[in-house]
Image (tube, rainbow, N blue to C red; front, side, top):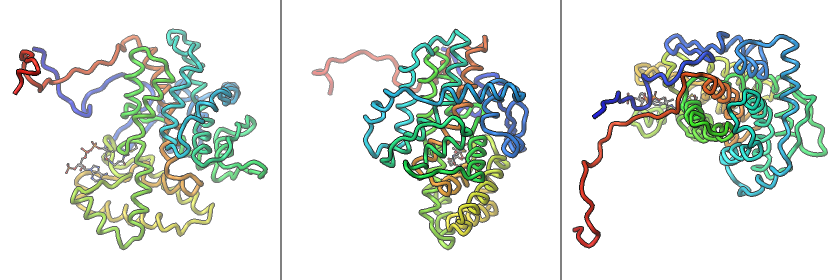
Length: 391
Ligand code: CMC
């Protein structure tokens, strides 16, 4: 019979060719379309990075204006969407709502199933980038039991999102430039990361020719797990559980005894450091200073934990370093989000990466339906025995 290479977790199998994102895990390098992540995080905006990932090059001023207008035009969701939302339990986890709500977009935009039409592919991409903040903010408001806030198109992408999350009717909401910039930077840091589990899920789902909105919903489902996007929520829960610096040694011992993992630590590809984590740590300090939480006890725990782990042979030998999610939870909490929203924000940002990768795959003539093989280890062929004859 056929013999296949066994590669659990795909640690040495390339599933596609891609021009979007480059990672060198040993050197800690991350490039989007050739541009280093730290330059994009410092100088660019999330919407510009969306254009870059989707189209291959940075836009000129005219192209950017047109893109900004298009995205702004698509921010609303159909009014019937409210009925769909109201079907969820009032305390539904916002990620559960996201999986369902984004999948449901495939019913609202059924034409998007026509993936052979290049125009439909572009419109679906724009709709997703534009509507994710609206849906994510709705999931948040629903979770809080507050009325939805409609998008405001004169605001920037991140201003509009923060306003939809935090403005309360009858109160005057004013954007804070430091916090808006931090939100935008967090989105940039999560925008794409080549063939991670959720992106591979989107590609695999899309390889059968499925509706793109349904494919993105599959990506959201995969992202939810604590080994992937769910790590930011778990990392903050872990810091809260440790609580104070004096309890760190006991916790680290538990990690060594394999009772639990250090959440926000380690990465399949980065074995030196995660270049996103550096920017995230800096953003964390900026946000905490802005909201007057520089003495946040969890920040102290995080910094001390990082120091101890980076000097401990257990973590050094295994090349375990803080990843992007180690400091993102503290930052997002300071921005006003509860832990249940952290992975939703990751999904919002990663949507552009997913849809860019999906589009690249659909437009790549060498791609076929994804169909891994297996090493069968079950029973050999045997004859059926009637129920009354079985011992
Ligand atoms: N804490 C303690 N030990 C760890 C950790 C950790 N966070 N991560 C890996 N190890 C150990 C693991 O026990 C193993 O040790 P040994 O060789 O003695 O058995 C060794 O390191 C290799 O681990 P692995 O599970 O083979 O590594 P992997 O490449 O399959 O896992 C990972 C990568 C990210 C799933 C893992 O590091 C992890 O579970 N980290 C915590 C969750 C987390 O922060 N995830 C977010 C990743 S970044 C955001 C994203 O892209 O989603």
